[in-house]
Image (cartoon, one colour):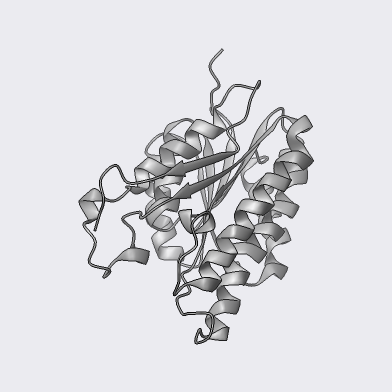
Length: 238
């Protein structure tokens, strides 16, 4: 029996551009109503318009996830505005370059707050709502940096390792509640985060590729769960 996302509600962070925008549009096309979260309200409106073309509601929620005190209210706005919550996609993230002995501590703290701390807080507040649904999903977008650390970005790698570890523990916590849990670890994706690195964008993973993985998890049969998906460019972008 195929799983449909029709009439389900998805919350997507970092939905103003790149991977998050592609994920939101993909889920809307599959039938879900979407709550779109980012700091950039104007860009979110553009994503919302693209989502609404498929006949499903799109709720714009401008929010700075660094302020974890606003997250519980954010979840309430989603459930009030769209009638519930089935799918959480934690995608928002920032880069943090710098070696372990020279890195900027404020940049490190921001990466920890956005990439890991806010993800954990949002998951904590969203899960009780997801558990009210007949089935649900909590999907975290990490990075291959969470599996293959490299020099010059120690804080970024640490946050993505944290996301991977949190996701695997999360699966054990909610697996009996019919909630899909997965962490998606892409390599280089053609987004603003890697622009200026001199890599061939047409050889990178595309945001739509990651969106396909998110939809794959959300519609996976009830008998099993793909708890981790690693995605690499088919050809080297170097």
